[in-house]
Amino acid sequence: MKIYDGGKIFVGIIIFLAFVLFPFYSNTGKVMAKPDPKIDTPEIQKLAVKKCVEPKDFMRSEHMQMLNDWRDSVVRENIRTYKNSMGQSFNMSLQNTCMKCHSNKKEFCDQCHNYMAVKPYCWDCHIAPKENKT
Amino acid sequence: MKMLFSFFAVIFLALLGFAGGKSTSLQFIFGVVIPYAAVATFILGVIYRVADWARSPVPFRIPTTCGQQESLPWIKQSKIENPSTSMGVWARMALEVLLFRSLFRNTKMELREGPKISYGSDKWLWLAGLAFHWSFLVILIRHLRFFSEGVPLVIGITESLDSFLQVGVPLFYLTDAVILAAVTFLFLRRVFIPQVKYISQAADYFPLFLIFGIAVSGVLMRYFLKVHIVGVKEMAMGLVTLHPVIPEGIGVIFYIHLFLISVLFMYIPFSKLMHLGGVFLSPTRNLANNSRIVRHINPWNYPVHVHTYDEYEDDFREKMKSAGIPVEKE
Image (cartoon, rainbow over all chains, first blue to last red; front, side, top):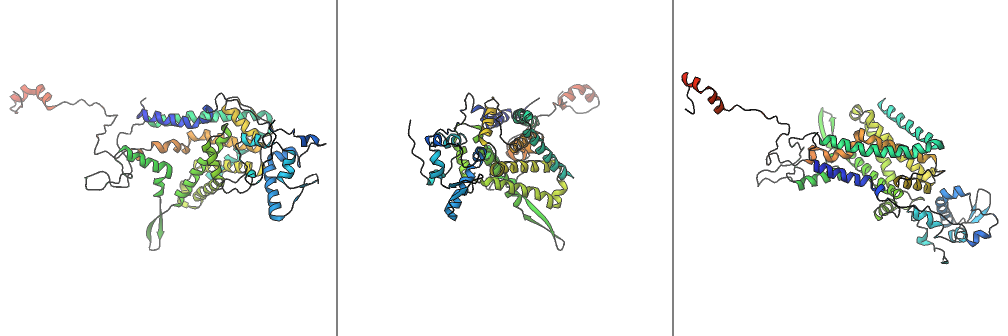
């Protein structure tokens, strides 16, 4: 068996492997820290029933959609009250409702967002809560 | 028939993925075993196909040319369309691989009243092909965010450019729409142009349906059905660090997506999708047209034993002399 232009073929295959195996060799020996969003802020500790505006699973997958809907509803339609699936009412506000409990942006929001390399543009306009460095 | 066969093949594969995602006992197979097998098949298969091609000799220069070849100094050479140097070949290959230069020349023939045949330029196939392939590349690069910790800048930039419209949350990716539109066009083209339909095989429809299925499942997963995305990344990182894990509650649509992609990767080395490697090895594109400058010797030339006239004369000199035939040497 003879390979013609073996040098060029070899270089081509090496380049191919460099691309395809990138995820493998760029991660060798790395130990991934799982994101661990913390919900132990003083405000949440005070709550009798530790529940968000909607159930946890819903919030996990839909919170971004909900915040987007809230924004549209408040900014474009001037509707500021959110009725959740349990019939409770909340003030639609990122800073005054969400961040009141979740005052620990670094340990809550950023945990998963950084892990997933997601950069939400909430904070282009909103002011991130001041966090006590402990 | 061919179309329906491919269509139902993809539906069947999607159902398999669904079954794999539904049952917790099958999740390991569909989430770990099959993806690994797919990547291994892909890598080994591509290397095998490329090596197989490289074993075929290309004895002579067979470039398809569309320009003046190198000739007398006062005749202007078309240096990229008909290159005689390596640099020219690089330029032509770059145009071919990145911009599909030869597809840009696509023409359409029509029979008009008269009857008259008319040829016209037809750029739609080129445009859709380009849109499709570039979207695919951008999508592939975007997906690397699931496979890297401290995501590299290039991936972040690609992603933010792709979502720069900032429509909806999660941000809408332009390439998602472009790839679906382009695949739809490439499919409809096979359906509505009779000549193209006539030559289309199941192997032409299958990749289109498969990629359509992958794109649709991805779009559903991102914008509509939602999955446990952190779990997805844990799983992806588990695979690439060789410590596979199956996080719970990811969502079945992810398994469909993953299974269809695994099938695509396994399918590539065995199918026309191997043009991924083949485009670099097209002798009509990657050879300099220097047939008149360099002597190319056929590698399978058989060493022919030649009996020269001198040897002939040595053999028969005496007989030639006696028959009165003139000889060169006495």
